[in-house]
Length: 348
Image (spheres, rainbow, N blue to C red):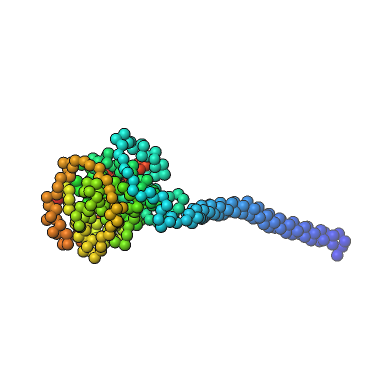
C-alpha cells in the first residue's frame, strides 16, 4: 500500500469519526436541552402549584381559626346563674298613651329581629313567645314595652313571634298558636314555647318564662278577676309547654272559631296524656289585663261545648298534624317577628 493511499483511508476514517462525533454531540445536546426544558418547566409549574396549595391551606386555616374563635368566645361565656341577679320582683305597671314603637325600640337596642340573648353569659333556656294578634296594636305595644325588659332580666335567650290573622273571618286563637309553633321551629330548635295573649302583661319577673317538667300555667290571677284563678281547671291566657309536651298532645285544636273553649280543649289533651298542670305561686303569677271591647270577629264560640265533648275522639287528627294555612308574609322588624297568615274560614 502506498503512502498516499494510506493517508486517504485515514482521512475517510477521520471524517467518519468526526461525523459520528458530531451526531453524538447533537444527540447529547438534544437530551440536555430536553432535560433542561423539563427542569425549566418544573421550576415554572412547581411554584404555581405551591401557591394554589398554599392558598387553599390558608383559606382552610382561616376558616378553622374563625370557627375555633367563635367556639372559644362561646366557651369563654359562663353559663348564666340558675336564678338571675337582675330580678326585681313585683313592679307597678304603667301604660302611657304617648308611648310609640320607636320608644320601645330605643329601650331595647340589643334586640334584633325580635330575638335576644345575654351578651355576658350563656343563657340556660331558649324560649319562643307566641302572640296571636289582630287589631290590637296598642295592646301589643304595651306588652312589648314591658315584656322585653322582663325577659331580659330573666337572662333568657328568647324570640317574640306575633302571628297576625289576615282577613275578616272569625278569630281563631288556637290555630294561630299552632301556626306560631310551626313557624318558630323553622328558625331555631326552641326548647320552650310560651302561648301568650296580647292583653295580659306580667307584673312580677319572678314568674319565670321557662318550661317545667309538666305543662305550666302562668296566669294564676289578674286584675280583672281580683287576682284569683278564674276557675279550677283554667289553662288559658299564658301557658308554657316544651316542644315535646306540645307535640305529644298534637298542639291545639284548629276548630275553635271565636272566643272560648280552646284552652279547655288543651287541658283535656294534657290530662289525657297523664300530664299535670303546674302553676307558680299565686303572689308571683299576677297579670294586668289591658281592658278592651271584644271585636265583632271574636264573639263567643257557641260550638265550644260540643267541640269539647269531642276532644278525646278528635285530638289525634285535629291539631298540629292538620293545621293548614297560607303564609302571606314574614317580616322581621327590631322587636318581633311578624307572621301574617290566611288561616281560612270556619268549616273550610
